[in-house]
Each structure stands twice: as C-alpha cells, then as structure tokens.
Image (cartoon, rainbow, N blue to C red; front, side, top):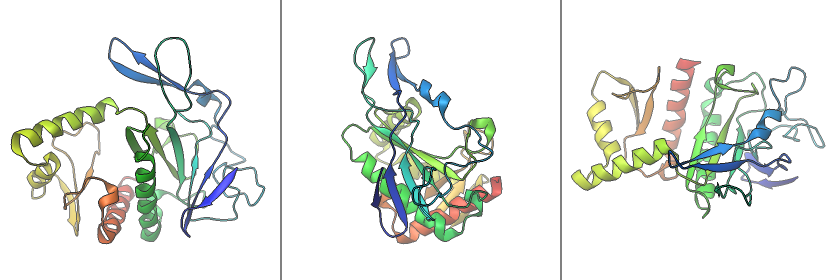
Length: 260
C-alpha cells in the first residue's frame, strides 16, 4: 500500500484489487457495452462490528489506516472496471478504474450535515480527480456520484461517494452530448445556458443565489430531481473559480439537507 499527499487536507492511496477482475462485454443487439463485476458480490455488506471506511490508525485493518483525516480517496478494492481480459467474445479494455471518496472520519455523519468548509474541500477533491482521471488517454468519461440508502444498494453507511473513470461514454451522457452538439450547430448557443435562461425566473426554481441556480428540470425523470447550474458558462467543475466553488458547496449542502 502506498500513500501520496494530495495537499495538506486530503490524501489518495492505492489498494490491491480483489483477485477476480471485472470486464465489459459488447451487446451487439443494442450496440452498447455492459459491465460485469461478479466479484463485487464478495464486497463488505452492511457490517455491524467493523467499518472499513473508519480510520483505524497506522497498521490498522480498515481501508484508511490513518489516525484521522478530512477527505480521503482510494481505489475501490471491488471495482466495477479493471484490467483487460483476452480471448472470448469482444471485451472492451477496462483499465480505467473506480475510486472511493470518504467525506469524513465520523461514521454517523452525512453529507448534508457536514460543515460548508468540508464540502468546499470536497469540491476541490472532485475537481482534482476529474482533471487527473479525465486526462488519461484510456478514460472517456468521469462520473462522480453518491448512492444514498440501502434501497439503492448502499453496502456501507459511512458517508462516502464514488468516482468512476469509464472507458466509454455511457448512453445517457452520449445522448445529451449529441443533443448539445445539434443545438449548438443550429443556434450557435450552449443548450445548458439556454435551459438556465428559460428556468431562472420560472416556478421550478428551487433557489437562485450568488453564482448558482438550482431548479427542477421541465422534463424531470426522477422524483425530487434537482439540477444545480453555475450561472457563468463553464465547461466542467475544474473551470469554477474560487467563489463559484464556495457557492457550489453551499448549494450541494442546501439540496442535500432538504432531502436528508
């Protein structure tokens, strides 16, 4: 195991993956890749006497052998994407990876109850990992997310999120990108900027403060779906300036605390 300091407040480290490796198989009928990661069935599932995400001190048995930390990032021991496989039917190179982002050493904390300073640090971590993973030639899409609740498949209650570095653009994102290119070609404008302009004075706005606006999209697909947009046109989270990162942290807290 090796540790590398990523600044004074958060750390990254690598963990050896499980023995079995995941793979991507190509569905010729739907023309898309499907992820298989059967070894994830052996991952830690709702432990009652030990949390692998709590700090366990030097030489400890958890995934975080530190006395304490603010935010820590490490490679998932049971990744959904892993090394290449040879032979058989078409298998997509899967040398990208999955990372776990632990928000706090406090086991019973939630994202919604974190201080804004910690979420601000988390925004920097997201931006750093987005840039580092997105710069890799084998990565086509970086997906930052958090699952919440056992109903959606959460197996560890310690507050954490994940980052997938995908070797392909997933269908939902590919559809959005195609639509964005078509809109840009037809109008010369950014579709997200147009969406924000159409919504910012409407009844679906949840809040609009400083540099961020949160709103329920006109064609929401999920109950309680909320989008948070920066008011300034930017390409990604890495382009947000200092003030916008603080505003995003505050917006994330406001939305999460409403749902929590």
